[in-house]
Image (cartoon, rainbow, N blue to C red; front, side):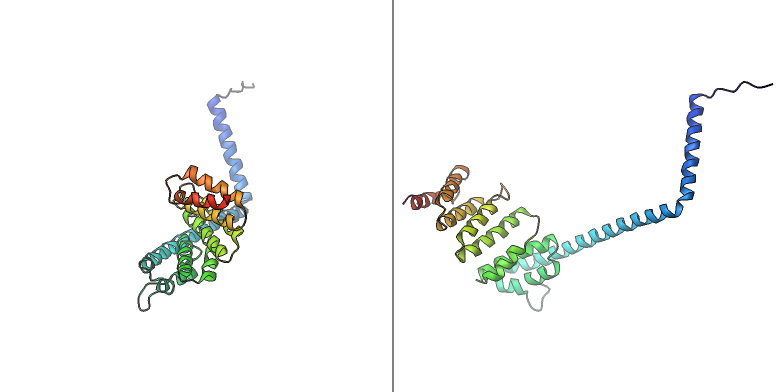
Length: 229
């Protein structure tokens, strides 16, 4: 005599599906174990490599920051040549050495700006331009400084239009940069020298409107008169 088939409860159906899914997954794993382990190993290796590179970069950046802090005393005291070359017989590396060894780090990029500044102050403009142009850091105030340094170089070389554009670009990097009004004034001055008087006038008026209490604003009128004359 045939027995009536027992009706499964919802719980039993779920448990049965779970067991079936488990065995299917187990079977798939067994069939493809070698492939899965190889792929998983690759992922783990890639993660490990990325972590190691990131860790090494962090360590290198910290070392660059330490070296930069040591040499900044020389820079701040006006010993620019010594700041560039380092102090013999001490653990103070020069800015040039820091850039050579750590230039790919954020602190190494910062060292490029101070190195360029030191060269500029000493009148070695081509050397200064090289490092201003090479700056590739993410700190906005130094991005502006790098552009302004290049602008100064072109202004000295009588390439006034290039200088004006670079000063203008430097002023637009960060709205909170305290040097923006100075960059704008220098941009206007170079536009005047390049014969672009209308552009210069617009910039001078923007300084008056946006930076009325700045030193640059106090110098605007004489340049406006120069444009009108």
